Structure formats: C-alpha cells, structure tokens
Length: 125
Ligand code: HEC
Image (cartoon, rainbow, N blue to C red; front, side, top):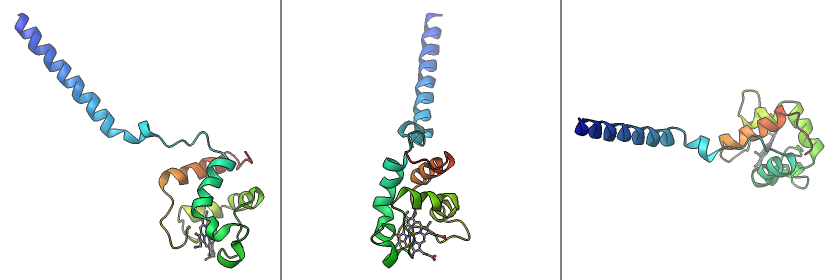
C-alpha cells in the first residue's frame, strides 16, 4: 500500500510539473507584458514617434518628408488621433497611407499602446 501511494504521489507531482511548464510556455506574453495601462503622451507616444516617425513628421521635417503632417506637438497629434488618421495609418487600415512609410510596421505592443492612449481620449499627459 505504501508503494502505491508513493508511485501515485510521484505521478501527481510529475503531472503538476508538466502543468506549470506548459503554462509558462503558453502565456509568455502575459508574463513579459505589454503595458497598455501606464501610457502617456509625453513618454509612450512621443517615445514611439521620436524613434519611428519624426524622421518625416517632426516640426522640422514635416514639410520636406511628411506631406506637411506634423506629429511632434500635442495638438497636432491630437488632431490626427481625433480624425482617425493616426490609428488608421499605423494599423495599415484600408483608406489610409500605411505608416511608417518605407519601414516595418510598428509592433503589436506599440500599436496597442497608441490605441489605448487614443481610447482614453488622447490626453495631454
Ligand atoms: C519616410 C517618411 C515617413 C515616415 C518615417 C512616417 N511617415 Fe507618415 N507620412 C509620410 C508621407 C509622405 C505621408 C503622406 C502619404 C500620403 O498621403 O499618401 C504621411 C502620412 C501620414 C499620415 C496621414 C495618413 C492618412 O492616410 O491620412 C499619418 C497619420 C502619418 N503619416 C503618421 C505617421 C506615423 C505615426 C509614423 C510613425 C509610426 C509615420 N507617419 C512615419 C511620411 C512618413
């Protein structure tokens, strides 16, 4: 009887180990995380734009490279956000010019962060 209990508990421990292993493998992104809660204009949105968009849409470059569309000052970004152009372009939706031009699309996390900021009313935070 002792032997059976022993074998049985090894089996259960073994199963639990498998369960925890696969949970980590199944949900890696949840643990690493994409923070769409602590999203601000000054840090998150401007951070993404400065590395991926200012080459064409900074105040200095917009007229030469960005068709005059400026995405540096809050009010300019807010206008693009409110009109739906900002999200449409970074999500490559039909009817919008897909951004950034000539480079890879923003990754899913960055798109989600910008979308979260817009859904929060595009605050100047
Ligand atoms: C290499 C230059 C370049 C880069 C980099 C770039 N853009 Fe643009 N963007 C343009 C040009 C040129 C247009 C006008 C394109 C058109 O109307 O066909 C434009 C248009 C837009 C528009 C208006 C789109 C529409 O259909 O109304 C938005 C919004 C925009 N860009 C946002 C961004 C964002 C956000 C980024 C960074 C993720 C970015 N762009 C990166 C050159 C660029």
